[in-house]
Image (cartoon, rainbow, N blue to C red; front, side):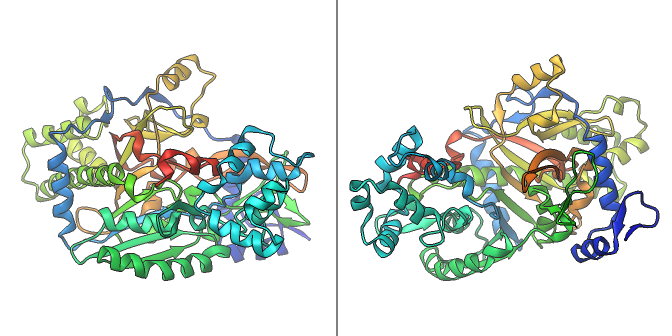
Length: 516
């Protein structure tokens, strides 16, 4: 029986209401999502692509010691630093070419990606493990199977549950890098990184992974086994945490008519995208959080640039944060001068790149309220890499709902590329976002910010998907480093391309950056 939920337009059955309640989703949220499918999301107005001339800082060799020392000093304080790693994504897209090979009507490697995989198969860190499962399941090793033309048997043992099951596992559990005596997974590389730049005075290293429920036990087992060795090697104590995307952050799917999509009569909910992880980040009791994707890691021999720039980004953050805290405490004291207010305004304009043409019309009392509202919010420092053809969002100077202009990380879908002026600004971009963030999560009184309060709900995404052959619309929440951090203070810093080494396809592991 269809019923109307009180005060809402969408019709739900009693079974729907039980399903909704089990996820912990408010009916008001669902109504907003249905309306969003009908109206879409507005484009964001941009005034410029950020560049080293406008909005992106370049840390000179002379400045580096100051910021490195600022971070070292911070590490000696009684602070909680967490390395936050989104790690729930499946690795299946890494193996798209190999899945297509399995489905192809030919048996020998033909496409360039297939040939590369088999020509260099001995260079993969997972080669020894693959060889073992091939021997166990096929009675022949990898080289023997290749010689017999049984390439697809090798791929099946790599991707399927009878072998390594890499087609279903998340990237964090895959063997990425080969060392002289052993291979190392992507998850382990993050543990090592944490010891290199996020170890506090008590020799503690906090690393938090967001994982999918079906893989959590595997992550916990692997971290329990491996962290003991790394703890001894680096003389640290690891605190490793895990969390899952909350069911309440799932979003309702819609059909072509913008009505709730049903699968076998039940409402279809989908994960809300990485923007849902703002809730997981908010749950951390941390002063500072490093945020970095699971697949952007390199072997130890190539870690130096990454470690250096992670410390520099953190040094910039704590330096700026201290200045902001000093200003806010001065405002609270009431013992500021007009000249000091102007200094604060210049800090907003020049260091945080927040522009507001209306400030010249504000009296001192109004100016104080404006300055405090802008300073008293979370701060993030984002590394930005010069464009090299890699996909990803980019740094822009965008117009906020209150009319101010500030740095924002935007995706191309958020910009009206049908507008020639906006398209020109987009194409002028010199940098892209590698997801390399350091975040300040507490205010000047030492209290945690409630991060969901700083999300711009107007910045989600709608994409077209399919379920059992039927087309549906999927709604993604504002992205973690996009709209979910829209109302944060943002500082862009240029980082070298050597710090950005993602693994999008399995053959990326053959790049020099991933070879020891």
